[in-house]
Image (cartoon, rainbow, N blue to C red):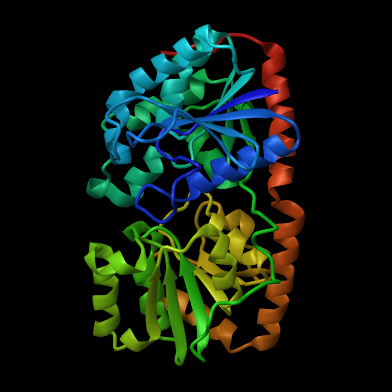
Length: 404
């Protein structure tokens, strides 16, 4: 099957760790590779953000990345891309109408990709599947006035959900949010993200340790990921160190405002000697860091899905996380880890302290975490489920209807 992935701001070729480069980039890359591995012809369309990028890039994983000229050929913040989506969609429509390759199904990732894909898919007469990766209503609820989303995002997302052929939710929590915003429940299918079981396993090199129990936390260096809560929590866990992986490269951390805030917080709590910011780590080296940890702390305020807990679980590392979004599905309290309320560092610290003090429970969690990741969350499983879904919507073979 010919599958067009649209990921307007999140290129599968991007270096992870920046403000707009994280889980979606990984999701699109891994899913495209898994689909290509079972014989699908996959092309990922992402915005051209540098003048020296070729239009087409064939990846070693068997899928192709196509750089779409929409807006300036330079980095643009995700929340500033909306004005360029009509040009993005027009380019797709022209390419599919006049070129020698037309998709049989289009899968849009993020709401702006959906806007670009809606008109193009309709003109091509092919079905459109939508994955939001994050919802504006949730972001607004948690960030309030700090939400930098373009005006009208929530309305656009509501319109998309009522116009596309199928919405792919990543967790059960997202279903409730989608239904509240007016997306018909029969149009929603849950297909969670997966984890690369080759890259992430209990076996392989281990990053150097500092002799203390290690609490690892991983992600983009943005406030909503809750790193400040993890540092406050670790301050209540004697003799444990906190290692933060993510953000810009190590040499640029001092220039990062949020990294400076985290270091200042550690100093104010008297734990600067127990908090280490590593910076960006190449994805192929992340297994070393997971395997070096005694526990992964994942403390986002909200999380559409959350890949890092799954990656840690696949490496045989238990997770202490906040009970939000996808973590509610992936982490089984009392079996693969523990969940605490979001934005409550005291509760997080108590859970970390209890788990680090109980070697037997920690081993049991680690074993169950690895098994859960292996049996339920492989990318091959995700690709199989989406292949079935794509076949269903492609069989209808009708233009996507726009609902006002």
